[in-house]
Amino acid sequence: MIRIELDNPARDDVARLLDEHLLDMFATSPADSVHALDHTALSGPDIRFWTAREGPALLGCAALKRILPNAGEIKSMRTATSARGRGVASLLLSHLVDTARRDRLDGLYLETGTQEYFAPARRLYQRHGFAECPPFAHYRLDPNSVFMHLELPTLP
Image (cartoon, rainbow, N blue to C red; front, top):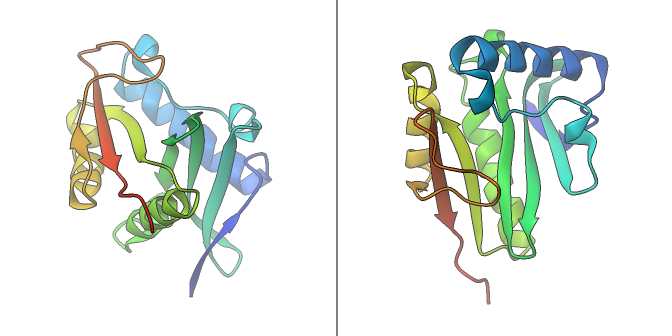
């Protein structure tokens, strides 16, 4: 059974997964277009970080960063290579969306790459209702970035 729980980005196995994530980002995109965070930045006070695990095995991770009082940004979505194709990213994304709704956020944003490497991620986000949008927060137009937004209806 896969469980999603708040976790520490500096935990040994998580830090290794995040290091792998950063290596892939820098191998795929120009350095000034890499917006992934390391485990230290993901430990910041405005970020909550979750892992997906099956028993002790780390399957993936994701973070939610508060960027405005009523909006969040998805950061560092990553599925372990050994867990790909099992729906881990969908479970993590659904968890982030549900958390944002419970937190009464109006919307979620994210930045991902334009390269073919990122096509599965873009399709995942689109399947979950995200649509392309202009740059948000501190981001600027960048031919290597796609910006996406999901509007979250207000709960009664």
